[in-house]
Image (tube, rainbow, N blue to C red; front, side):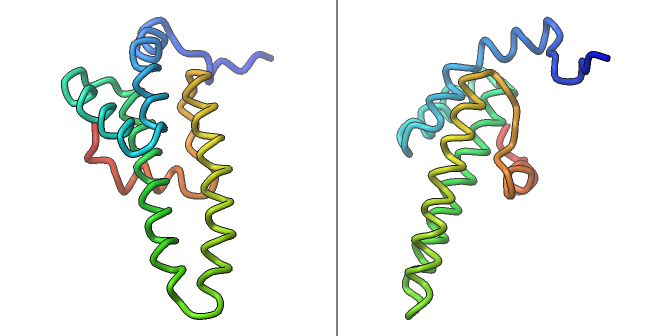
Length: 120
């Protein structure tokens, strides 16, 4: 039996193709995120918005880890391990955008979508 839940229909495929470039750009540093946000604010592509929320969530998680690094003794260890996790999640998210998938990053991706749902 073929699982067709991940097969986009023609409208969804068109949305993905139109938003793929900006989705990828959103993962390219803070400047890419800002550019993707501004351009998507005009075009309102749902695929791009999904990846903007993922990228912004990863960035905010990174900022939280940076603040946590100031906690004596264990802060630097948690921050270092968290940084490795962020890099891995960033790679997963970027690959998802390149492949035209709306796959949230493991662990926090669904929460990023929920918390940042105002970004469309």
